[in-house]
Length: 287
Image 1 (cartoon, rainbow, N blue to C red):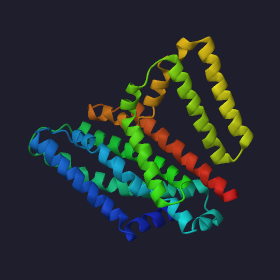
Image 2: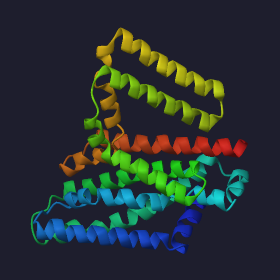
Image 3: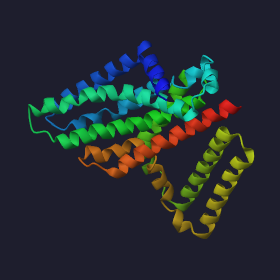
Image 4: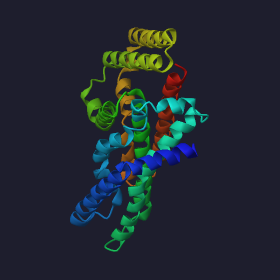
């Protein structure tokens, strides 16, 4: 894993992408620090990070698009598949390298609350808890981006799909409010979700009976539940969609609370999507 981590980190900076990402992130954070903390007189650095959440939706796909898709384009993925290093070590090394590049501007930003403290009263606990929460949120987005990069055949496709997915996660609370909370909406929504899970199961395992079983059992269960206990379904799909709102989990840090549930949520998302990526790569390795 350490070898892959060093190799991937070196490639970020040899290709200048790492420097460009860090410079852009620092520029954005610096501009918003001036706008929020100095011009609007808010000595809360977590408010600054809250303001730049949307911009990181735009740039994280650029950071992750090359992790796996570029390996496939250059045919160097065959070297990875034949290497003695385990697949989970390869994916974890790539994830940690991308997370390191993401963490560098945040590490430099740790000096900003101290700077703001010279001009007013700063709650350092909430400021640094906000930085930690932002790092975990970025790690979750990076894990999602790497998984989508493993599915894509080119960097451009990976970037576009990752952007669409992360934008959907960002807008999820607004999209959820537009949906009806009726039992029929929940039944149809969960049926569509089970079809998606069945497709992902097939795409990961190439096991037709397993994928078909997931789809049939899931849709059958929703149909039975809608006919027998429709009240149980009311509003449940909206609640499930809200659980996919990755970026909204950062709100608790903005409000000055260190929410352990949000920390567990981000770590779970990271672990799940690293697992999905490992399964996708394993499928290609043994194909």
